[in-house]
Structure formats: C-alpha cells, structure tokens
Image (cartoon, rainbow, N blue to C red; front, side, top):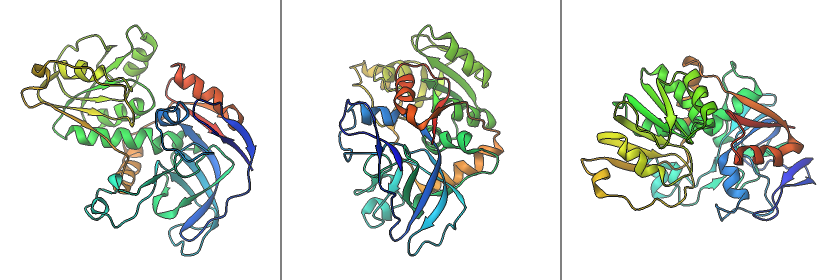
Length: 328
C-alpha cells in the first residue's frame, strides 16, 4: 500500500510502498477514506514532539471503512465507517484510567505518533478508540472533527459552563469548529488572529464571532474565558490581560513555545491557566453527537495523499482557512 512516511525529524515525508497491515486481537483494519492534517503532525515532523516511533506514518484524524477485523472485535462490522482520533490505546489499569482520566494514562499510545496513522491507504486501530461518525458529514468534512473538533470541545468544556464571553486565540481548524459550538450554546465569541490577518478575522466573523481583531488588541469587553490554539507562549499573558476576575485561560495545544515572564497582577484575582491533554472516549461520544445538532460545518481544503508535504507546508505557513484533508 502507498503511505507517506516520516523517517527522521526535520525531513520531508517519503512515499513508501508498505505491506498491508494486519489487525490483531481487538483491532479493525480500515481503508482510509480521508485523514485531516493537524498542527500536531507539524510538531512531530518538525521535531518539537520528541518521542515518535520511526519510521512513522503520521495522521490521527482518520475516517475509514472497516475492511477487516481481528479476533474479539464486537463493536464494528465489515463496511462500517468509523473515525480514529489521537488517543489510540490506554492500559485501563493505571490510577488515571481507573479514575476516568484515560487521557492522562501513564502508558497511553497515540495515533500517528507511537502508532502508524492515516497518511496511508490502509491502517489498523484499536476498536475501543474508534467511533461511529454522524451521517450528515461526508468523509472529508468529518475528518477535522476527530482532533480539531475533539480538542476544541474539551478546551471549551474546561473553560466552564458559566463562561459566556469566550476569546479564541488562533483561528484555525479547532477554532473554526468550536466557535460554532460556542455560538450554538449561546456564548459570544471574540476571535484573535495574527495582527493584520484580515482574512482570518473575516473568516471568524462569518462564523458568528461578535468581534475579531489581532492578538495585540484588547477586546471591547473583558472575557470570561480564553482558548489558545496557536502554539505561541506569548499569548498566555495577552489572554490573561483580556480576561475578567476569576477567568480561565485554556491552552489547547500539545506543544507551545515558552511562556514569557509576566506580572503576577495578570494572574491575580483568581484567574486560572490550564492545559488540555488529549481526549477521552466520553469527549468523543459527546462531541460527535453534538456537532450535527449544533449545525457545525467544517471548512476544508482537499489534497491527494501524495501531496501530504504540501499540505503540511500550507499549514506551517498559515495558508489555510479551516483544515487540510488528505484523500488517498
């Protein structure tokens, strides 16, 4: 099968013909129909996440059709369409797993990082971490829901139900999905882009943002919470400065540049900074049921699988509106 393979950090992906994977106990074999390109893929390729298996098939926003099943598979049958997210395996027995925090599992393995992912024609996945997808979405439209949507949703939840004015820093794949969920929930969205990026600001307004401006601007009202999706540590003190007392600033990425020193006064008055790590199966089930009810649509740009390197470059250089999606 054709796959795009990372052989070393900082190296271009290489086209390889690999053997067809075989599902073992509890796994399904999937024909990949679409795989969205995530900023986490960039962090892996660019060497900012340092523990990938190598060689590696990246990709963790996979839409696939079940074409084979291993022993013990009882959740899916041949021909079903499923989605595969970043969290690909957990032990089920560590303190975190037993406490319902499987996203923090001590031995977790991740799709497209320690497990070969979806930049390929076929892949295998643990049936426990595959999810039925809403029929309302075709394959390309569904792919960004599986990380951009899921991490965005977990970030919004951790901001708190009482937060009505939500600032979103970095208006890319995750932001464009979760802004729609926030609006459905009756919240006001304030969108922050790179200074001068009028296209991103117009995109945000088109998705219902009540205000859009540069990350160096002050919103017209103090924010109840802020979600930071851009991997820029300097946005943390900027977001704190834009929030009211008692607000929460949620860092939604897996990697971020260093947070610069800032005055304690920005954090004082019971403001909170917290990170989001991975996802849980509950997050996935809840969000995938909510997305069609909320009328969430995804903005995508389609690339052939052989164009994976171009898709990553377009993401790296900020040339995308919404999400890139690879199609074998």
